[in-house]
Length: 469
Image 1 (tube, rainbow, N blue to C red):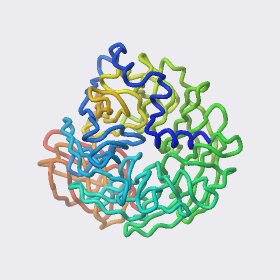
Image 2 (cartoon, one colour):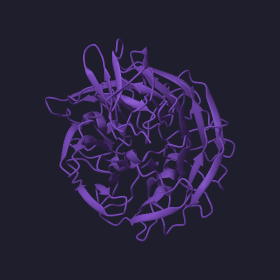
Image 3 (cartoon, helix red, strand yellow):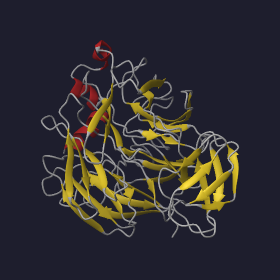
Image 4 (cartoon, rainbow, N blue to C red):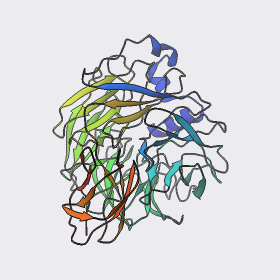
């Protein structure tokens, strides 16, 4: 299978980026200067040099309650098995854990998810652990790491994609291989570390899932597989927290081999990317919860190709993403696409600022986007970058739903001196913990809607509505 070949190359230390480039990193710095809109500001924030990690893979950075950004690299570090790092918004990077394959796992190919209590990040390693098939771990901002599960093959193997925390407080994810038929699994793991295999893929319903899951507003989880389905080009599915799986769509030639986690739009539909192959350069699609799929955009090469990364929904209602290759210099782009499929290229990478993007973007609460490149940069191990396009600051809540009286953390920027917090217009009592964190509780009388924080200089609105059951 296609994905198994990808895994074999990685185990040999050969990147797919190098193979498709046909020349490797040495060719990158010959490229022309990247061009972006005059209103956009692109900044390289950090360079990976193998000592501090290298090759951040299928990950999107995540903002912690301290305002810093956290992520992983798939290789490098003192143990050779990749790292967990934190980075200030200005670019000061600190390695907080070095993986050594055994016993703590190795090659974390996905990023982290911030637990709703704000205290811990959860992630997976693609290899290592007690049996060599990967792990699930928890880590705090100081770097204290606990392994909660080592996969043994029967319960899954190689969890490439990341985790998502459900509204029930459990975490959900997938393994690329293993399970009853060795086509991969869907699993649930509690915050105490008890893992349950919810489903083993059988091929006709999908195979070899690479991305993660997203919980829809209907309470079900949605995802994709990289292969399998009726045409063996991947499938889109939904699964309940109890393990009942429904294949929504078997992907064909126009939308084949998806790698990335889906994102739910404000319209209740799900949006995703397909990576394509050497003939098909990838696409962006939307699919309804009932399984009606629409191709929104097909890449042509000059505008990017092979979008392995997930989309992120910006506060302006548009989606933002990256391509692994293509663009002016054929080594990757950043793009914006509207919900109806109008695409604009925001940045063309030139090698010195990074090359070959597998990972997606995150919108920091200050308004700008941050992301990682798999290769190149000054030290050749990849980069961390930011892109400001004029979107203003906002706040994010942890969690995004809760009953009256439940505790809520509000993440933001420059929150010091805040004078009010309101849940859909209902005032709440609150405590300003730091410039990036407010703690509060859902007030009596609150209803579903946006959370608004008033600071001495501006009014900040949550990026998604807070749901009050």
